[in-house]
Image (cartoon, rainbow, N blue to C red):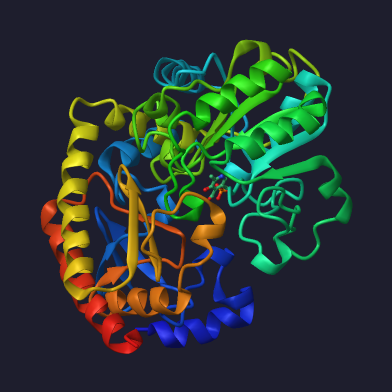
Length: 436
Ligand SMILES: Cc1ncc(COP(=O)(O)O)c(C=O)c1O
Protein backbone atom coordinates (compact mmCIF):
# COMPACT_ATOMS: atom_id res chain seq x y z
CA UNK A 1 0.00 0.00 0.00
CA UNK A 2 1.28 3.47 -0.91
CA UNK A 3 1.11 5.80 2.08
CA UNK A 4 -0.09 9.39 1.89
CA UNK A 5 3.39 10.77 2.44
CA UNK A 6 4.92 8.48 -0.23
CA UNK A 7 2.21 9.48 -2.66
CA UNK A 8 2.68 13.17 -1.90
CA UNK A 9 6.36 12.83 -2.90
CA UNK A 10 5.41 11.17 -6.18
CA UNK A 11 2.55 13.54 -6.98
CA UNK A 12 4.78 16.60 -6.59
CA UNK A 13 6.95 15.37 -9.46
CA UNK A 14 4.05 15.47 -11.91
CA UNK A 15 1.42 17.83 -10.49
CA UNK A 16 2.40 21.37 -9.40
CA UNK A 17 2.23 21.25 -5.60
CA UNK A 18 1.02 17.65 -5.82
CA UNK A 19 -2.52 18.76 -6.68
CA UNK A 20 -4.82 19.29 -9.65
CA UNK A 21 -6.44 22.43 -8.21
CA UNK A 22 -4.83 24.98 -5.90
CA UNK A 23 -7.71 24.72 -3.43
CA UNK A 24 -6.89 21.04 -2.82
CA UNK A 25 -3.55 21.86 -1.21
CA UNK A 26 -4.02 21.82 2.55
CA UNK A 27 -1.36 23.84 4.34
CA UNK A 28 -3.00 23.20 7.71
CA UNK A 29 -2.40 19.44 7.62
CA UNK A 30 0.82 19.73 5.60
CA UNK A 31 -0.25 17.74 2.52
CA UNK A 32 -3.29 17.26 0.29
CA UNK A 33 -5.86 14.67 1.32
CA UNK A 34 -5.41 11.85 -1.20
CA UNK A 35 -8.74 10.07 -1.25
CA UNK A 36 -9.22 6.39 -2.02
CA UNK A 37 -13.02 6.64 -1.96
CA UNK A 38 -15.99 8.54 -0.60
CA UNK A 39 -19.29 7.28 0.72
CA UNK A 40 -22.13 9.24 2.31
CA UNK A 41 -20.69 11.70 4.85
CA UNK A 42 -17.23 10.09 4.76
CA UNK A 43 -14.02 10.17 2.74
CA UNK A 44 -11.22 7.62 3.14
CA UNK A 45 -7.51 8.30 2.71
CA UNK A 46 -4.92 6.00 1.10
CA UNK A 47 -4.37 4.20 4.41
CA UNK A 48 -8.15 3.55 4.61
CA UNK A 49 -8.68 6.00 7.50
CA UNK A 50 -12.23 7.36 7.65
CA UNK A 51 -12.93 11.09 7.97
CA UNK A 52 -16.25 12.85 8.47
CA UNK A 53 -16.09 15.20 5.50
CA UNK A 54 -16.74 18.89 6.24
CA UNK A 55 -15.32 20.03 2.88
CA UNK A 56 -17.75 18.08 0.69
CA UNK A 57 -16.06 18.81 -2.60
CA UNK A 58 -15.98 22.51 -1.65
CA UNK A 59 -19.76 22.44 -1.50
CA UNK A 60 -20.60 20.32 -4.55
CA UNK A 61 -21.52 17.19 -2.58
CA UNK A 62 -24.60 18.48 -0.76
CA UNK A 63 -25.98 14.94 -0.99
CA UNK A 64 -22.80 13.44 0.41
CA UNK A 65 -20.68 11.12 -1.69
CA UNK A 66 -21.96 8.29 -3.85
CA UNK A 67 -25.64 9.20 -3.49
CA UNK A 68 -27.82 6.53 -5.17
CA UNK A 69 -29.91 9.14 -7.07
CA UNK A 70 -26.78 10.65 -8.65
CA UNK A 71 -25.17 7.26 -9.28
CA UNK A 72 -28.38 6.08 -11.02
CA UNK A 73 -28.39 9.19 -13.22
CA UNK A 74 -24.78 8.70 -14.29
CA UNK A 75 -25.40 5.00 -14.98
CA UNK A 76 -28.42 5.81 -17.12
CA UNK A 77 -26.28 8.25 -19.14
CA UNK A 78 -23.54 5.66 -19.63
CA UNK A 79 -26.14 3.20 -20.91
CA UNK A 80 -26.93 5.69 -23.69
CA UNK A 81 -23.50 4.92 -25.13
CA UNK A 82 -21.02 7.45 -23.69
CA UNK A 83 -22.32 10.04 -26.09
CA UNK A 84 -21.04 13.58 -25.82
CA UNK A 85 -21.89 16.87 -27.52
CA UNK A 86 -25.48 15.97 -28.44
CA UNK A 87 -28.78 17.18 -27.06
CA UNK A 88 -31.05 14.66 -25.36
CA UNK A 89 -34.54 14.89 -23.92
CA UNK A 90 -32.93 15.07 -20.49
CA UNK A 91 -31.32 18.44 -21.28
CA UNK A 92 -34.79 19.92 -21.80
CA UNK A 93 -36.23 18.05 -18.82
CA UNK A 94 -33.54 19.51 -16.56
CA UNK A 95 -34.04 23.04 -17.91
CA UNK A 96 -37.78 22.77 -17.32
CA UNK A 97 -37.15 21.65 -13.74
CA UNK A 98 -34.76 24.58 -13.18
CA UNK A 99 -37.40 27.05 -14.36
CA UNK A 100 -39.88 25.51 -11.92
CA UNK A 101 -37.51 25.84 -8.97
CA UNK A 102 -35.48 29.03 -9.50
CA UNK A 103 -37.50 32.28 -9.37
CA UNK A 104 -35.60 34.19 -12.11
CA UNK A 105 -35.21 31.19 -14.45
CA UNK A 106 -37.04 31.32 -17.78
CA UNK A 107 -34.37 29.81 -20.04
CA UNK A 108 -31.21 27.81 -19.33
CA UNK A 109 -27.78 27.27 -20.88
CA UNK A 110 -25.40 24.79 -19.23
CA UNK A 111 -21.65 24.70 -18.87
CA UNK A 112 -19.18 22.77 -16.72
CA UNK A 113 -17.54 24.85 -14.03
CA UNK A 114 -18.81 27.91 -12.19
CA UNK A 115 -15.83 29.87 -13.53
CA UNK A 116 -16.78 29.15 -17.12
CA UNK A 117 -20.45 29.89 -16.60
CA UNK A 118 -20.00 33.20 -14.77
CA UNK A 119 -17.51 34.25 -17.46
CA UNK A 120 -20.09 33.57 -20.16
CA UNK A 121 -22.77 35.27 -18.10
CA UNK A 122 -20.65 38.40 -17.92
CA UNK A 123 -20.31 38.47 -21.70
CA UNK A 124 -24.06 37.99 -22.03
CA UNK A 125 -24.77 40.99 -19.78
CA UNK A 126 -22.52 43.12 -21.98
CA UNK A 127 -24.24 41.86 -25.12
CA UNK A 128 -27.68 42.52 -23.66
CA UNK A 129 -26.92 46.06 -22.46
CA UNK A 130 -24.29 47.28 -24.94
CA UNK A 131 -22.23 48.43 -21.91
CA UNK A 132 -18.92 47.15 -20.55
CA UNK A 133 -18.44 48.05 -16.91
CA UNK A 134 -18.89 45.58 -14.06
CA UNK A 135 -19.80 46.53 -10.51
CA UNK A 136 -18.62 43.90 -8.05
CA UNK A 137 -18.31 43.63 -4.27
CA UNK A 138 -15.00 43.38 -2.46
CA UNK A 139 -14.53 39.88 -1.06
CA UNK A 140 -17.00 38.23 -3.43
CA UNK A 141 -15.58 35.40 -5.52
CA UNK A 142 -16.76 34.61 -9.03
CA UNK A 143 -14.22 32.11 -10.33
CA UNK A 144 -10.91 32.57 -12.04
CA UNK A 145 -11.61 34.44 -15.31
CA UNK A 146 -9.23 37.40 -15.82
CA UNK A 147 -12.05 39.95 -15.84
CA UNK A 148 -13.48 38.78 -12.52
CA UNK A 149 -10.69 37.36 -10.38
CA UNK A 150 -10.17 40.71 -8.70
CA UNK A 151 -10.47 41.97 -5.10
CA UNK A 152 -11.50 38.66 -3.55
CA UNK A 153 -8.98 38.61 -0.73
CA UNK A 154 -6.64 41.54 -1.30
CA UNK A 155 -3.93 42.32 1.25
CA UNK A 156 -5.33 45.23 3.23
CA UNK A 157 -2.35 47.47 2.46
CA UNK A 158 -3.06 47.10 -1.29
CA UNK A 159 -6.86 47.13 -1.13
CA UNK A 160 -7.36 50.89 -1.29
CA UNK A 161 -9.80 53.05 0.67
CA UNK A 162 -12.50 51.18 2.57
CA UNK A 163 -15.42 52.85 0.75
CA UNK A 164 -13.84 52.88 -2.73
CA UNK A 165 -11.48 49.90 -2.95
CA UNK A 166 -8.91 49.50 -5.76
CA UNK A 167 -9.37 46.53 -8.12
CA UNK A 168 -6.73 44.07 -6.90
CA UNK A 169 -5.70 41.18 -9.22
CA UNK A 170 -5.78 37.86 -7.36
CA UNK A 171 -3.22 36.20 -9.62
CA UNK A 172 -0.04 37.02 -11.44
CA UNK A 173 -0.75 37.09 -15.16
CA UNK A 174 -4.04 38.99 -15.05
CA UNK A 175 -3.64 41.80 -17.61
CA UNK A 176 -3.52 45.29 -16.15
CA UNK A 177 -6.21 46.68 -18.43
CA UNK A 178 -9.05 44.47 -17.07
CA UNK A 179 -9.06 46.85 -14.09
CA UNK A 180 -10.40 49.66 -16.26
CA UNK A 181 -13.76 47.95 -16.56
CA UNK A 182 -14.43 47.04 -12.97
CA UNK A 183 -15.75 49.03 -10.05
CA UNK A 184 -15.21 47.49 -6.59
CA UNK A 185 -17.66 48.33 -3.81
CA UNK A 186 -17.65 47.27 -0.12
CA UNK A 187 -20.46 44.81 0.69
CA UNK A 188 -23.29 45.87 2.99
CA UNK A 189 -22.52 49.60 2.57
CA UNK A 190 -25.59 51.29 1.03
CA UNK A 191 -23.95 54.72 0.72
CA UNK A 192 -20.89 53.36 -1.09
CA UNK A 193 -23.15 51.40 -3.44
CA UNK A 194 -25.28 54.45 -4.22
CA UNK A 195 -22.12 56.47 -4.88
CA UNK A 196 -20.79 53.77 -7.24
CA UNK A 197 -24.05 53.76 -9.20
CA UNK A 198 -24.14 57.57 -9.32
CA UNK A 199 -20.62 57.57 -10.78
CA UNK A 200 -20.78 54.47 -13.05
CA UNK A 201 -24.41 53.26 -13.23
CA UNK A 202 -24.99 54.63 -16.73
CA UNK A 203 -22.04 52.71 -18.19
CA UNK A 204 -22.42 49.52 -16.14
CA UNK A 205 -23.70 46.30 -17.73
CA UNK A 206 -23.98 44.35 -14.51
CA UNK A 207 -23.97 44.25 -10.75
CA UNK A 208 -22.51 40.84 -9.95
CA UNK A 209 -22.75 39.49 -6.41
CA UNK A 210 -22.80 36.49 -4.13
CA UNK A 211 -26.22 36.96 -2.50
CA UNK A 212 -24.73 35.23 0.55
CA UNK A 213 -21.00 35.82 0.68
CA UNK A 214 -19.87 32.29 1.58
CA UNK A 215 -16.51 32.95 -0.01
CA UNK A 216 -15.68 35.09 3.02
CA UNK A 217 -17.02 32.46 5.43
CA UNK A 218 -20.68 33.32 5.66
CA UNK A 219 -21.68 36.97 5.37
CA UNK A 220 -25.38 37.63 4.98
CA UNK A 221 -26.62 40.82 3.38
CA UNK A 222 -27.96 43.33 5.89
CA UNK A 223 -31.75 43.83 5.83
CA UNK A 224 -32.71 45.92 2.81
CA UNK A 225 -29.30 45.73 1.14
CA UNK A 226 -30.20 43.31 -1.68
CA UNK A 227 -33.45 45.23 -2.18
CA UNK A 228 -31.31 48.35 -2.73
CA UNK A 229 -29.19 46.41 -5.26
CA UNK A 230 -32.39 45.51 -7.12
CA UNK A 231 -33.70 49.10 -7.06
CA UNK A 232 -30.43 50.67 -8.25
CA UNK A 233 -30.15 48.14 -11.09
CA UNK A 234 -33.71 48.98 -12.18
CA UNK A 235 -33.05 52.71 -11.95
CA UNK A 236 -29.85 52.59 -14.04
CA UNK A 237 -30.75 49.78 -16.46
CA UNK A 238 -28.08 47.47 -15.02
CA UNK A 239 -28.47 43.67 -14.97
CA UNK A 240 -28.63 42.19 -11.46
CA UNK A 241 -26.60 38.97 -11.67
CA UNK A 242 -26.52 36.57 -8.69
CA UNK A 243 -23.63 34.15 -8.52
CA UNK A 244 -25.45 31.24 -6.87
CA UNK A 245 -22.64 28.74 -7.44
CA UNK A 246 -22.56 28.08 -3.68
CA UNK A 247 -26.05 29.12 -2.59
CA UNK A 248 -28.10 27.25 -5.22
CA UNK A 249 -30.21 24.45 -3.72
CA UNK A 250 -28.36 24.91 -0.41
CA UNK A 251 -30.39 27.48 1.48
CA UNK A 252 -33.72 26.81 -0.28
CA UNK A 253 -34.89 24.90 -3.39
CA UNK A 254 -34.91 28.24 -5.22
CA UNK A 255 -31.49 29.26 -3.87
CA UNK A 256 -30.62 32.55 -2.19
CA UNK A 257 -33.10 34.44 -4.38
CA UNK A 258 -35.93 32.48 -2.79
CA UNK A 259 -34.32 32.68 0.68
CA UNK A 260 -33.86 36.48 0.47
CA UNK A 261 -36.99 37.20 -1.54
CA UNK A 262 -35.23 39.23 -4.26
CA UNK A 263 -35.25 38.05 -7.87
CA UNK A 264 -32.24 38.88 -10.05
CA UNK A 265 -32.28 39.11 -13.86
CA UNK A 266 -29.65 36.44 -14.30
CA UNK A 267 -27.92 33.84 -12.14
CA UNK A 268 -25.45 31.00 -12.20
CA UNK A 269 -26.16 27.70 -10.47
CA UNK A 270 -23.21 25.44 -9.70
CA UNK A 271 -21.68 23.02 -7.21
CA UNK A 272 -24.73 21.31 -5.58
CA UNK A 273 -26.60 21.54 -8.90
CA UNK A 274 -24.81 18.44 -10.22
CA UNK A 275 -24.76 16.54 -6.90
CA UNK A 276 -21.02 15.97 -7.39
CA UNK A 277 -20.98 15.84 -11.19
CA UNK A 278 -19.45 18.80 -13.08
CA UNK A 279 -22.31 20.91 -14.36
CA UNK A 280 -23.33 24.51 -13.90
CA UNK A 281 -26.13 26.59 -15.41
CA UNK A 282 -26.62 30.13 -16.60
CA UNK A 283 -30.26 31.01 -16.24
CA UNK A 284 -32.47 34.06 -16.05
CA UNK A 285 -35.02 36.24 -17.69
CA UNK A 286 -35.96 35.47 -21.27
CA UNK A 287 -35.09 39.02 -22.43
CA UNK A 288 -31.51 38.47 -21.27
CA UNK A 289 -31.14 34.80 -22.25
CA UNK A 290 -32.45 35.46 -25.78
CA UNK A 291 -29.20 37.29 -26.51
CA UNK A 292 -27.40 33.92 -26.57
CA UNK A 293 -26.59 32.40 -29.96
CA UNK A 294 -28.17 30.95 -31.99
CA UNK A 295 -31.08 33.26 -31.06
CA UNK A 296 -28.98 36.37 -30.42
CA UNK A 297 -25.33 37.18 -30.96
CA UNK A 298 -23.62 36.47 -27.64
CA UNK A 299 -21.49 33.32 -27.99
CA UNK A 300 -21.56 30.49 -25.48
CA UNK A 301 -20.67 27.06 -26.79
CA UNK A 302 -18.29 24.13 -26.26
CA UNK A 303 -17.84 20.44 -27.04
CA UNK A 304 -18.27 19.34 -23.47
CA UNK A 305 -21.08 21.63 -22.36
CA UNK A 306 -23.73 19.60 -20.54
CA UNK A 307 -22.30 16.10 -20.89
CA UNK A 308 -25.20 13.65 -20.41
CA UNK A 309 -23.56 12.07 -17.33
CA UNK A 310 -23.80 15.46 -15.61
CA UNK A 311 -27.27 16.32 -16.91
CA UNK A 312 -28.65 13.05 -15.57
CA UNK A 313 -26.59 13.44 -12.39
CA UNK A 314 -28.18 16.87 -11.87
CA UNK A 315 -31.68 15.53 -12.56
CA UNK A 316 -31.07 12.90 -9.88
CA UNK A 317 -29.83 15.55 -7.44
CA UNK A 318 -32.76 17.92 -8.08
CA UNK A 319 -35.13 15.03 -7.43
CA UNK A 320 -33.65 14.72 -3.93
CA UNK A 321 -33.74 18.48 -3.22
CA UNK A 322 -37.41 18.49 -4.20
CA UNK A 323 -38.42 15.78 -1.71
CA UNK A 324 -40.64 16.95 1.16
CA UNK A 325 -38.65 17.57 4.34
CA UNK A 326 -35.25 17.89 2.64
CA UNK A 327 -34.51 21.41 3.94
CA UNK A 328 -36.24 20.84 7.28
CA UNK A 329 -33.83 17.95 7.94
CA UNK A 330 -30.81 20.09 7.02
CA UNK A 331 -32.08 22.79 9.40
CA UNK A 332 -32.59 20.33 12.26
CA UNK A 333 -29.09 18.87 11.90
CA UNK A 334 -27.75 22.42 11.60
CA UNK A 335 -29.45 23.52 14.79
CA UNK A 336 -27.96 20.56 16.67
CA UNK A 337 -24.48 21.18 15.26
CA UNK A 338 -24.29 24.98 15.44
CA UNK A 339 -25.64 25.15 18.98
CA UNK A 340 -23.17 22.43 20.05
CA UNK A 341 -20.31 24.24 18.31
CA UNK A 342 -21.22 27.57 19.95
CA UNK A 343 -21.35 25.90 23.39
CA UNK A 344 -17.84 24.52 22.84
CA UNK A 345 -16.56 27.96 21.79
CA UNK A 346 -18.03 29.43 25.00
CA UNK A 347 -16.72 26.56 27.14
CA UNK A 348 -13.15 26.88 25.85
CA UNK A 349 -13.39 30.68 25.65
CA UNK A 350 -11.58 30.75 22.33
CA UNK A 351 -12.11 33.99 20.37
CA UNK A 352 -14.01 32.57 17.41
CA UNK A 353 -16.97 33.96 15.52
CA UNK A 354 -19.20 31.29 13.93
CA UNK A 355 -21.58 32.43 11.16
CA UNK A 356 -23.86 30.19 9.13
CA UNK A 357 -26.73 29.96 6.67
CA UNK A 358 -28.24 26.55 5.97
CA UNK A 359 -25.69 23.74 5.91
CA UNK A 360 -22.60 25.92 5.28
CA UNK A 361 -20.68 28.06 7.71
CA UNK A 362 -17.63 30.24 8.24
CA UNK A 363 -15.26 30.38 11.22
CA UNK A 364 -13.41 33.59 12.09
CA UNK A 365 -10.70 32.83 14.64
CA UNK A 366 -9.58 35.84 16.66
CA UNK A 367 -12.80 37.71 15.82
CA UNK A 368 -15.76 38.09 18.16
CA UNK A 369 -17.93 40.79 16.52
CA UNK A 370 -20.41 40.04 13.73
CA UNK A 371 -18.61 39.99 10.36
CA UNK A 372 -20.46 42.01 7.72
CA UNK A 373 -17.80 42.67 5.08
CA UNK A 374 -14.44 41.57 3.70
CA UNK A 375 -12.28 43.90 5.77
CA UNK A 376 -13.67 42.44 9.00
CA UNK A 377 -13.28 38.89 7.66
CA UNK A 378 -9.65 39.61 6.74
CA UNK A 379 -8.86 40.19 10.42
CA UNK A 380 -9.24 36.47 11.18
CA UNK A 381 -6.26 34.56 12.60
CA UNK A 382 -5.05 31.99 10.08
CA UNK A 383 -2.53 30.45 12.50
CA UNK A 384 -5.33 29.55 14.91
CA UNK A 385 -7.51 28.28 12.06
CA UNK A 386 -4.72 26.03 10.74
CA UNK A 387 -4.08 24.57 14.20
CA UNK A 388 -7.81 23.89 14.52
CA UNK A 389 -8.05 22.17 11.11
CA UNK A 390 -5.02 20.03 11.91
CA UNK A 391 -6.45 19.12 15.31
CA UNK A 392 -9.72 18.01 13.72
CA UNK A 393 -7.88 16.06 11.01
CA UNK A 394 -5.94 14.08 13.61
CA UNK A 395 -9.30 13.26 15.20
CA UNK A 396 -10.91 11.97 11.98
CA UNK A 397 -12.71 15.08 10.71
CA UNK A 398 -11.66 16.71 7.44
CA UNK A 399 -11.80 20.46 6.89
CA UNK A 400 -10.26 22.04 3.79
CA UNK A 401 -8.34 25.29 4.08
CA UNK A 402 -11.27 27.30 2.78
CA UNK A 403 -13.38 30.19 3.98
CA UNK A 404 -16.48 27.99 4.08
CA UNK A 405 -17.24 24.50 5.39
CA UNK A 406 -20.38 22.45 5.67
CA UNK A 407 -22.33 19.29 6.17
CA UNK A 408 -24.48 17.32 3.76
CA UNK A 409 -27.99 15.92 3.71
CA UNK A 410 -26.63 12.53 4.78
CA UNK A 411 -24.69 13.82 7.80
CA UNK A 412 -26.85 12.76 10.76
CA UNK A 413 -26.68 13.96 14.35
CA UNK A 414 -24.45 10.95 15.05
CA UNK A 415 -21.82 12.18 12.54
CA UNK A 416 -22.16 15.73 13.81
CA UNK A 417 -21.52 14.49 17.36
CA UNK A 418 -18.29 12.94 16.08
CA UNK A 419 -17.43 16.31 14.54
CA UNK A 420 -18.27 18.09 17.82
CA UNK A 421 -16.01 15.65 19.69
CA UNK A 422 -13.13 16.50 17.36
CA UNK A 423 -13.88 20.22 17.63
CA UNK A 424 -13.82 19.93 21.43
CA UNK A 425 -10.33 18.42 21.33
CA UNK A 426 -9.05 20.81 18.65
CA UNK A 427 -10.37 23.92 20.43
CA UNK A 428 -8.68 22.74 23.63
CA UNK A 429 -5.38 22.56 21.74
CA UNK A 430 -5.91 25.97 20.14
CA UNK A 431 -6.66 27.47 23.55
CA UNK A 432 -3.51 25.92 25.01
CA UNK A 433 -1.30 27.03 22.12
CA UNK A 434 -2.54 30.58 21.58
CA UNK A 435 -3.70 31.72 25.00
CA UNK A 436 -1.67 34.77 25.91
C1 LIG B 1 -19.51 31.96 -5.63
C2 LIG B 1 -18.61 31.18 -6.54
N1 LIG B 1 -18.57 31.51 -7.85
C3 LIG B 1 -17.81 30.84 -8.73
C4 LIG B 1 -17.01 29.80 -8.33
C5 LIG B 1 -16.20 29.05 -9.33
O1 LIG B 1 -16.78 27.81 -9.55
P1 LIG B 1 -15.93 26.56 -10.04
O2 LIG B 1 -15.01 26.18 -8.93
O3 LIG B 1 -16.95 25.51 -10.36
O4 LIG B 1 -15.18 27.03 -11.25
C6 LIG B 1 -17.01 29.42 -6.99
C7 LIG B 1 -16.16 28.31 -6.54
O5 LIG B 1 -15.84 28.11 -5.40
C8 LIG B 1 -17.82 30.13 -6.06
O6 LIG B 1 -17.84 29.83 -4.76
